[in-house]
Image (cartoon, rainbow over all chains, first blue to last red; front, side):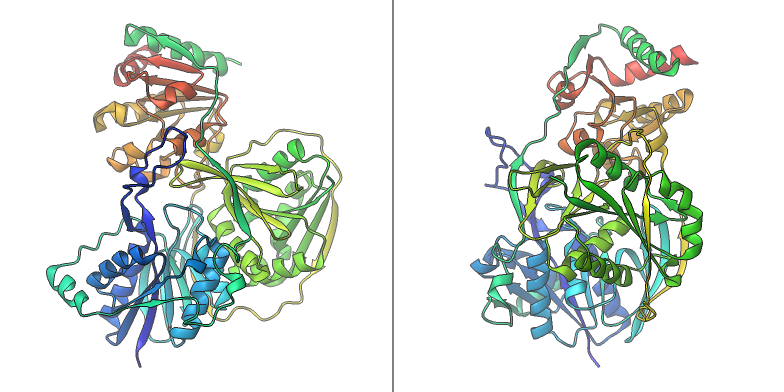
Length: 264
Length: 322
């Protein structure tokens, strides 16, 4: 039986390259868009599974504007089999709850016999890490987040390594299930064959009418959280500028500060 | 205002997580006209081992949901118990620590209740509509967003270390024990092994943090940070840039998601001060920045901005202390 995996990916601005306007808003023009780095870890898990379970089909799913097709093409070149773009003006402005609802409804309707949903732990633009758990709830799936490695897998279950600041666990989960990868540093470089075969693979575009979803629960309308204001962070301290001609005199000053708190 | 605020009490390895106390302390300072209550899911033996510490949390009412199966955290079960509790009690604001388990659990609860959730907040306020306004770093820590939710209760996770624990008068806590009749365990998740890692609370306990950044220029120079920290018993730390160069491990990076510090003195050597770094150190009592670049953002954010060569100053300090 075919083992279907849904990998959820997101197109994000390259946050290492953010510039500010004079009004302290983010300069969006000319910002590079990339696949969220954590999602590449998720794709890697799916490709690893494909090596073990031969009859694996990987669906790369993203929600975004037409431009988000670019990351689906990249995912296909990396080895995913199908690309699904959920694109509709009504989807835009979605917070994590509305995003989780939309993706879950899509998966339920269009890929109902999936065995695994694999996500990146978080997206580097929002950093919320909320969509995977929120989706697992909507799809009524068991979940493992903060996953760093796949240990073993069969059709019916898999064993994963979960690692947090506090603990390291080996967890077995019965399929269908949701996995969130916390590996941000995975690199998959598609080869020419990958790009060529990607040209023959299909990217399907879905709007809100093409699967079962309640328009009251998607996009901005379906999003309970709203940004009241966004601003650049500045610590305001009464800064004292000290120009020291030699490292020694600067060191004396720091030594004095340290002694002041250590002698109390 | 008089809102009912519920704080999720998180326990790891028979210890109450620091962030739980930090949230409660912050609420006492900023929301003192509200009822501050706690919610704990636990088994009997864990409950007995933390009972005394729970009394010191200084909350009005502690709800303890007990079940033999709550000896370890399991997302699906905990989420449904918590959602059930919230639906059946008067809760205006629900807060949890943004630990990794907290961030695993909270979205599942929010999704079950179909309410908004704001992640990893560093500031909490009440807006003019009497709604929670939760502020958090976003865009890779380069921008702050103040967020409210249209739904009830208001719900946010709070970044560990973002708030300080201040001592206060202890008050009597009313304890309400609830026996959970849950017997169906989640059969789909089987935790085969769990290894508790040594708690890396070096940042929490250190009165002095010595941090290095790209201004140190070489790994050898960065090693001076370790040497000097060891010499004066301070905690070493690194900027993201230094970690990316491989000079320091990620575990000592300041300013990444989920890490804020509040030492008495924070000394930054050759750190320019990306926003997420500045957010991460903003609770420090005193910030000293050593940098040759007078225009580096950290120079405006430090109490003392010392214009000097970072490696040179470190070498000189090592001389003076040895």
